[in-house]
Amino acid sequence: MQKPLSVLVIDENGPRAAIIEAGLRAAGHDSVTVVNDMNGIARRISDIDPDVIVIDLESPNRDMLESIFQVTRVVKRPVAMFVDSSDQASIEAAVDAGVSAYIVDGLRQERVKPILDLAVSRFNAFSRMARELEEVRNELAERKVIERAKAILMKTRSIGEDEAYRLMRSTAMNQNRKIVDIAESIVTAASLFETGKK
Amino acid sequence: MASKDLMPVRAGFLPLTDAAILIAAREKGFAALEGIDLILHREASWANIRDRLSVGHFQVAHLLAPMPIAAKLGLTPMPLDLIAPMALGLGGNAVTIAKAHMPKIRELLPVGELGAGPAGKALAGLVAARKAAGEPPMTLAVVHPHSGHNYDLRYWLSASGVDPTRDVDIVIVPPPLMADALEAGRIDGFCVGEPWSSVAMARGAGEIITTKSSIWRSSPEKVLGVTGDFHRREPAAVHALLRSLVRAAKWCGDRENFEELSMILGGAPYLDQPPHLVLQALAGRFAYPDGTEVRAPAFFMPYERAATFPWLSHALWFYSQMARWGDAPWSVENARAAQSTFRPDIYRAALSGIAAALPSANAKVEGALDVQLPVGSSQEALVLGPDGFFDGKVFDPDLVEAYVHDQMGGKGV
Image 1 (cartoon, rainbow over the protein chains, first blue to last red):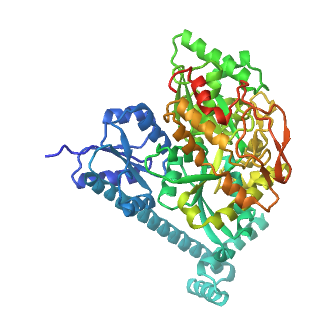
Image 2 (cartoon, helix red, strand yellow):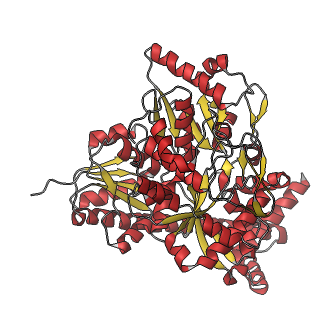
Image 3 (spheres, rainbow over the protein chains, first blue to last red):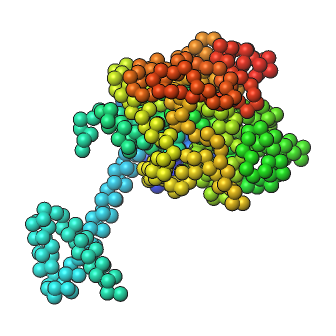
């Protein structure tokens, strides 16, 4: 049996790093180390002595990392994942996802490719999640604005909740705008009148 | 959106004042006037820019001048075909030393003195004192091994009597993290492009002791990197882009526009820094903790002195330093390869017919001009120099081998 590969994940985004680590462990890679902090990284790398290093492309520390590989030779000559790889599609997929990998020179490509593929899919899943979370947040914020606008209308025009909502909806339709935009205008206008009163 | 009739060209850049020409070309409409929709992507590392050029995400980029040379010589982790048909200005870097060391430095270097000679002497004194006291060597940071910062710093240290390979540790730190690293005591000083020295000074983390413009006057820094593939497929678009960038450079070089330019560059999508700091960086005006304001003459030049011309002698000087410090082996073939990445022929072809200064030669002896000198030029009048190294040495592009031989103390070549 081959010696299991030792994988180092460098990602300052803690939750994303945890997701990658979990994925690698689930795929049978027991020797996974996650580093979130770049302080003393040269020393850490030499202690861990990884076969594969996975790093996010948003990290401004890639230049430092590459120079550590070149100058101090703390690890066994790691090279960028891209070297020797004729698989242009998987390189592009990695760059698109925002992840890059360095591997120890001489390691066979087919042993490492599943690791990079996994990192790519986890990075993509993470971005998707972050996007969805953002959407949910926006939706919640929109609902709050509409609620506040409704309350303002009810108070200033002494009408019921349903009527207030209908009024906003019909105004939105007439002006060809979204209901949340109308609600925002009402809240802004009300806050201006509030300030004026003081 | 007018952009539907324009040709999209994607460019990567790092948040530095010397990305000004690319940013102004987009924001002030110079690119659009030439039919180009210049789409700018801020990146976190030079490695990212290199990789995204390689996979075709970018056609062009703001690059450290030695990077296309390193790619040509096979020093990048993957093969990459890059050319530099234009430079993106002269100067723009500064050397900053941590606050903790400044009392010692100030014994020899008064505030207001930014000369590379006196500053080098002061630093050499500190390095020697630490050595005598058995203290660890100072750690100095640059942004990339293949950078003007690294080679300028090493040149300056050497000529000041400090061996950059033994007397100090030179490490890599990304520009936006320099001030943090200095403040946290992880590094003792750095050489970086603006506004990152000004940011460190404003935070009280350290002080600028000299500038690139004093180590080597009118010296090259960033270039426009273009993928060979893009140039082969779309030569007309490359020409159009160069014309727009030279017009943008002229706009950036006009002092009347500095305030507007600093507002644009300081914006969130670009440097994301206070405009007044960017304005100081553009003008080469530095504010010291004691309240003194010091001006570095000709600190950053985006246009004057043929600042956008890709001199072959600049490419050769960078290669000479790569050989000197062991980044690339010396050979006549390598020198020829290094020189071939800079493309004044493309620059000339693109700019013939528009009012821009075109020098009559493609290479010059670096350090030959002590004063400003009007030189042979077609179209607009051109004044070059002064262009001297602070130690008075001269770099003759016809005598590179002898230069490297001499610098290596007669060994290696």
